[in-house]
Image (cartoon, rainbow, N blue to C red; front, top):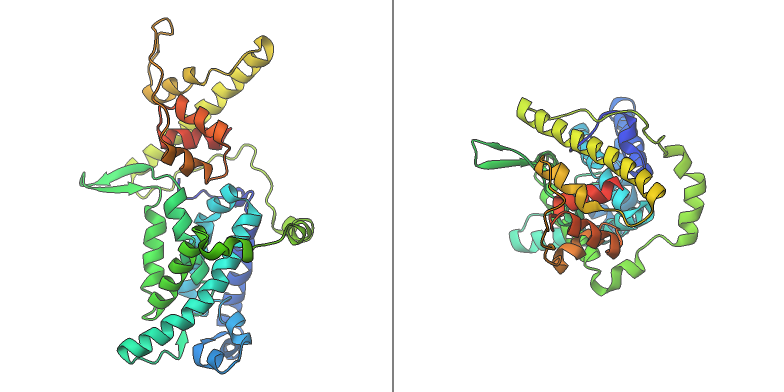
Length: 337
């Protein structure tokens, strides 16, 4: 599902919660109460070239356009799944690295536009925008694509469709937003591919991460959901029905995992995952007496894709073997363990 309702949707995503609350609240306060002070937060490229470095920080934190604030908040909320998979420290390092890299590429792209087209860009859209566009790189590469429905039988609606639509809306909100978007995408690609060992240079040290985990993180932490169920947010009845089917699948999986886990404690032995997945995927009774051919070995690209999400190789191989090398089913299994 793309999003869930309630504050529990931000469980294990304290940085996303902080980025959702603080810049958004400041943006609204500036727009409603302190309009004269908005000049301090303008992303003035010409002033930065004149060594007003403080504008490089203030101009790239708070959105001055409420439409940009709304779209950015939606994107941050949906990108919270990346923080859960990468961990807060790695997610913070990614945002810090792409924020610094995109600052350099913003200036380079402004100079390129001036040389090629003769257009002198005095300012760019303000806000935490380039790192948001950079998050589309791991979102596209790491998040599995699950089809929910089709429009006229041709155009698929997936769990990523809404995120791309919101990103397109943000891209078209300003004529100069393209510069910020391209800068963010380039920065995200370079950081993800670790070009010139940028991940070893721009990262959050362990000591600093420990300090923030004990001081700042508790402020934005969210209580673990216990009995709250996800609510279908699809725009059509078909999408909502599909989402509720997926929710039922997850509940069935958790129930069977719990039952088999108790059986394992009582009887000992290995956990038989091959009995779990056919029940969920095929919706039919499998005759355990019939001999079954072993599944083909998992392709290395699928193993690498799932390992990039933070899972160990042994767990990835077990999930792929149990799901007959179905990446989407294996991902759901790993997330529910």
